[in-house]
Amino acid sequence: QVQLVESGGGLVQAGGSLRLSCAASGSGFSAYAMGWHRQAPGKQRDLVATIFRSGSATYADSVKGRFTISRDNSKNTVYLQMNSLKPEDTAVYYCSARPAFSIDWSRWGQGTQVTVSS
Image: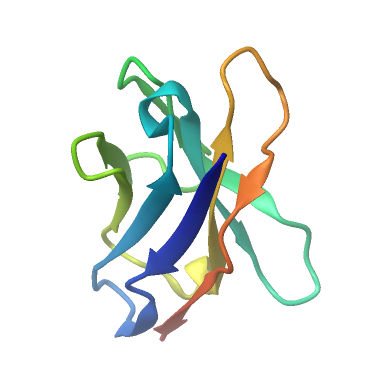
């Protein structure tokens, strides 16, 4: 099982950039698909980006072309580079892990706040 800790959130102006990091402890990091989700106040938690064991990635339409997910298996870390940020990107961002051959995001970090001012 992996434990996840996010960092890198903060306050940024619209059009700015932030990079979120998620450090994983425990064994088997490279075997997990990793994801970033976000939850704005009063809204459901939505999947933003996924990176698979192969390194391929998928994105929500709302962030495609602006956000990039990456992973460094040697550091047990997954990143979310967020560019051209908009006020509607304001949310708590959560890192998650999904074991191979599972459809469930079974491991979660504590979340990090991202606030984009207009």
